[in-house]
Figure (spheres, rainbow, N blue to C red):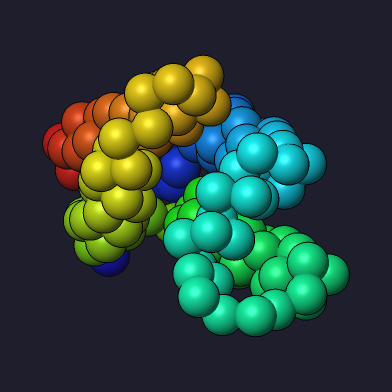
Length: 150
């Protein structure tokens, strides 16, 4: 099968570094959200308006909601990092690899983009990480085309 190509080391590093930037900035953003009392108060007023609930129960729900949101945002960067690592050492890549991960990264980038969280520096780090990830994936098309001509 000539359509299978080895993932170049440079592209692996770009994927791993941009994914780690996304993971780190998302972790810091979640940490800041969980530790901010004002955000908790706003969330409690919006979520439990007119409901009598203790602050401890509401805080547990707030932390759980933020951690679930955190894990949901990390599925794509962690998955592409693991898959790229194995693609470099054991597997090979083809156009399907690029297509599937480009769609997933674009969806995750749109999910982050439509948060409209302009006041957070982590918002911009996440967008930059996803943009680098998408450009790296699309540049793999040239790598596959060059390997076909050899």
